[in-house]
Length: 415
Ligand code: GLA
Image (cartoon, helix red, strand yellow):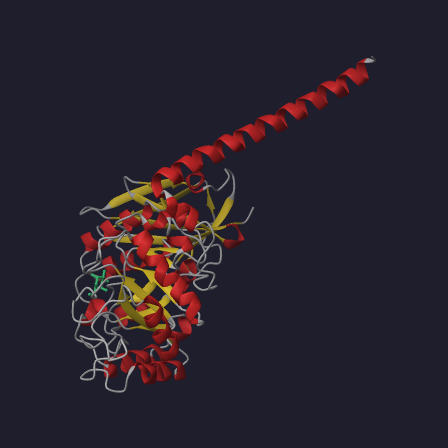
C-alpha cells in the first residue's frame, strides 16, 4: 500500500473512532439524564414528555398589573376598571403593560347550583364577563386567580381542585386571558400531579389563556414547569422591603438556565410604588426583575402613580431588556460587588451592578467576565441616566455606587 493510501486509511479510522466516541458519550449522557429524571420525577417524566401547554403565549415575560400586593382582599370591579383606565391614561399600556389581573377574593364563598364559580355579588355585581368586555374594550387583557386546592389561599372562596375542566370552561366563556393558579388547601398530592390537570383543562377550553403556576418554588417548578405553564413562582410571597426583594432575586437566580421564551421563572410581583422602599431601592428591584426576565406585574395602586414611580416602571430602555427576544435570564457573575449579566439579541449584553451593602462601593470589572472577547471596543449606554458613555469601553467597566444603588448598562461591541 502506498503511503498516501495508508494516510487516508488512517484518517478514515480516526474519523470512525471519533464518531463512535461521540455516540457513546451521547448515549451515556442520555442514560445519566434518564436516571436523573427517573429518580427525580418517576412517572411524571413520562407523562410530561410532550409539551402539554402549546398555547404560544409568554414569548416574552408578561407585563401588567395585579391587585394583590396593594389591595389584598379589598378589591371590587370599580378598582379593577379604574386600574385598566389608568394603565391606558398613564401611557403604561403603550409600553407593554397589558394584563389586568384580579387576584384572590373575587368570588362567592360557594359555587352556584350547577357547581360553577360565581363572582362575589357585593363587590363584582356586573360579573366577570362584563369586566372582561370592559378591559378588552381598552385593548387590554383580563387575568383571574384560582387555587389547585379546595379553597383559595384567603379561604374566602372555593378553589378549582376537582373542578378543573368546569372552571377552565367558565374562564374561557368569560373571556379570561390569564390564570394565576395558587397552591393552598390542597389534597396533599404533588403540584406536578395537580397543576397539569389544569393545563389540560385550559387547552380543552379552547381559548389561549396564559397559565401562571404559583406553587412558591416548593417542588422546584423550574425543573418541570415548562411543559405545564407559561411561568412558575420560584419563591414565597414578596413583601415591600429591600431584604425581601433581594432574597427573592437570589432564590430565582438559581434557576436561570430554565427560563426561556414561553416559560419564565417568577420571583413574585413588583412592589415598586407601594411605599416601603427608597426610590433607589425600587430602581434595584425593577432592574433585577427586568434583567432576570421576570414577569413585570405592577403591584401598586396604578390610579395614583407618583412621578418617581412612573420614572421607574415607565423606563422603556429597562423594559426592552426584559422583553428582549433572546429571552435569556441574567446570572450573577460576581458577588463581592454584585454583577448580574445577560446576553441580549444582536450580540449585545445587559449588565447590572448592585451595591446591596450599607457603605459605598467602587468596582472595576473585566468585560471578559460577561463573555465579551478581549480587545473588543464596546459602547455603554447607562439605562437609568439615559446617556451613552462618551468613550467606548476597552477591557474594563468601572462604577462608584452609593449604598443601595445600582448601575445598569447596555453594552454593544463595536469592533
Ligand atoms: C398566595 C400567593 C399570593 C396571593 C395570595 C392570595 O399567598 O402566593 O401571591 O395570590 O395567595 O391569597
